[in-house]
Image (tube, rainbow, N blue to C red; front, side, top):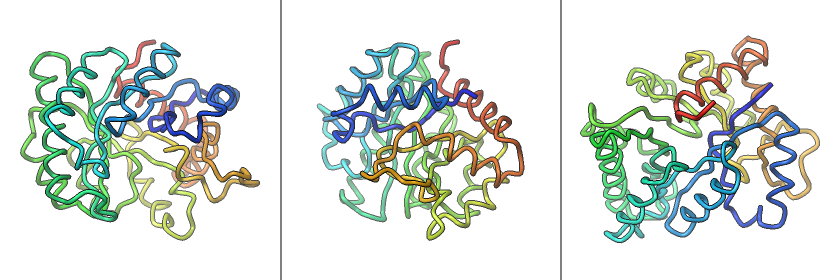
Length: 268
């Protein structure tokens, strides 16, 4: 079984002490590649540096998460455009809207989101299309409205760490977007509704991710003492996902890996 973790925050400082060991454990568990999430001006260059350190295994995204939208300036836009000229950067984002925490003002979130969608549109127009790595929480209507303005000008998109409703899921699937499933599925308090919804996701639209070090699966026994999520726990998420979809874990693993490889245009 070979898996691709499409959402790994490996630049997080909790991995500074043992990053190589974390990846060794992941490889031993069957996770052979990872898309490292870039989500802020501070971390985007570090994510690119990490991706360059393991060519063919680690790849990068570059973007500004809505939590950091207030930092989106003209200089930030220029930095992102320079990053997207690098071959190791395979997606635009993490970008989107988050009205649950509102760490940045909503007008700033919308502006930052639109500017990053424009980067994706410009890359596509220049013959270098890159998919979108999207975040949405409690902002579905505005999220769709902004993306609607870019229809026909951007490439494929994945709504990463999907936790939403049936209506939201089918709104995304109707637009041929992809869905990223995390350990939220394993949370009996908040993720129970996902157990049924994941059956409706076509295999060529489904991908898996840990969002480590966040979202440690609550069904993991025993949990790590430090409560840190790791890419090595991705097979646990895939096993639960397969059970909920009513298919063998090998089927889920093969489908999500093939989908991720095609979506991010990974070599090999």
